[in-house]
Length: 306
Image 1 (cartoon, rainbow, N blue to C red):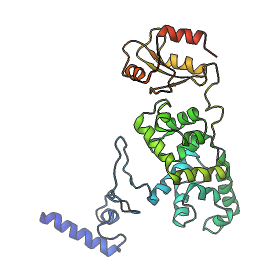
Image 2 (cartoon, rainbow, N blue to C red; image 1 turned 90 degrees about the vertical axis):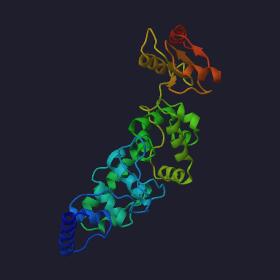
Image 3 (spheres, helix red, strand yellow; image 1 turned 90 degrees about the horizontal axis):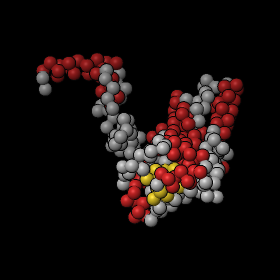
Image 4 (cartoon, rainbow, N blue to C red; image 1 turned 135 degrees about the vertical axis):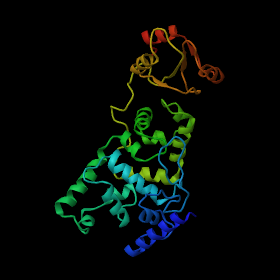
């Protein structure tokens, strides 16, 4: 080691110990205290699993599904984003977590005013306001509950699509990977991740606890697809259409009650084929799904079958 650097570290350590040791040697906090730079931990401080950065994500995280940090992460996501509970933020959640009062979403809804009144800083009014705000959050729509469950790869947009496509948590829990792929914008990898999450007994138990606590697990009218003569039909559009953009064709089919997805399966009613279609044509032929021309689409929209 360069002598100057070595001497600098000696001086820094002398100064650090003079102030009093706050973190164990070798920890990220120790290095931050000594050199004034925040170092990211290489291992999870709660379960000691190696920290990873999933492909396509900006943040590093603990990959251990059983890690206690997952519960804290889910709680913060719930109170600050999904449910947006007034007066309940990250600081309070961490305090309740450290005290062992709240370690899961059901725990949050079982929290009592009496428990809060035992904590420094809470008076009758403030404790009542927090409990009332938590109770009021039971009314958030199903799409926000889905987002708040912290399911891998399910953000705001995907949660809304899943809520609209399946309509209830029961249908979603019973859905296979192939069923989930029929939802707009969901490919095989994401569908597999969602299906695996709902097949886990602990996650299914969580859903049932939330149901018993009164949270909404069915889509409201804003989430539900339009009812019409094409209700129950599923279509896929591939290639470039002459008379419509693909977005316009999708909207026209959905206005009649049809579902329009991105993936072909045996449940697909038909694939609308335009110019320069992709691989969906071959997939449809292999699955025995009818191929529709633009004229077929026009006839379907003009005189939809009951």
